[in-house]
Image 1: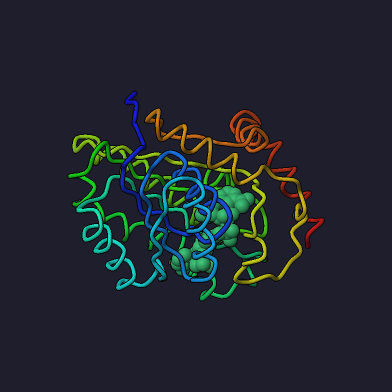
Image 2: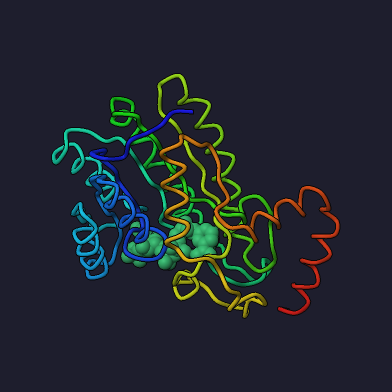
Length: 265
Ligand SMILES: NC(=O)c1ccc[n+]([C@@H]2O[C@H](COP(=O)([O-])OP(=O)(O)OC[C@H]3O[C@@H](n4cnc5c(N)ncnc54)[C@H](OP(=O)(O)O)[C@@H]3O)[C@@H](O)[C@H]2O)c1
């Protein structure tokens, strides 16, 4: 496994205006990584820029939507103009929704895939030529434990994260000969405003309010995995146990999920 020094590397971090992306931006700033922070909310981004300055390495904001081709091109152009290249791409921006599959609108299903999967695939494809010339290059995709096990009332989100898991593994194999490493981070429940930003909310999730891990812990585990050149991590012991239970006792987990669905119905 390679040992990567993050000091001085050049990174794009999507979804850096809050939650896990914000914590990652601050943790990378502590390591001396130069970051371009890409998200839609300018005011929130400006606050995160302040935090990166306080942490030791001031980041650059890029206000834009990952779904928008021009915004993605602007992010890559900015990295080229400011730094002459790119070493790290952190695909973190994500959205979710709550509701049963039967009642879900096709628009919501597509919106979730646009942000959580298609934008990641497109931005990554567009960044590969620059990354391949970078120093110890790495792509970091923030997936979810729900990209390994489906649960009720978040079917579109689970499906988008499953798509990301498989695609990330294909990407890792394809980019290995070019020296670009690929890390998949699969967090479990994390204390962030994700649930406040649901694009559709038709049921009260039975596990809403469940205590998660701090976003800063996920960020520290991600940065450690980047340094170590790891391929996949699950930075949450409760989430890790759910995946072990799913692997060993899938019928038991299916029954538990059906019981949860009854509570939420
Ligand atoms: N929280 C959890 O329990 C949990 C668990 C597993 C995985 N995850 C994953 O972790 C990642 C971060 O989520 P979070 O929990 O930190 O949620 P969050 O606090 O809601 O943050 C989501 C970030 O994505 C950005 N974003 C959303 N749509 C975007 C778009 N179209 N273009 C650009 N940026 C966009 C948001 O910024 P703007 O609104 O400013 O654009 C925000 O900065 C997501 O991929 C999520 O699926 C979260």
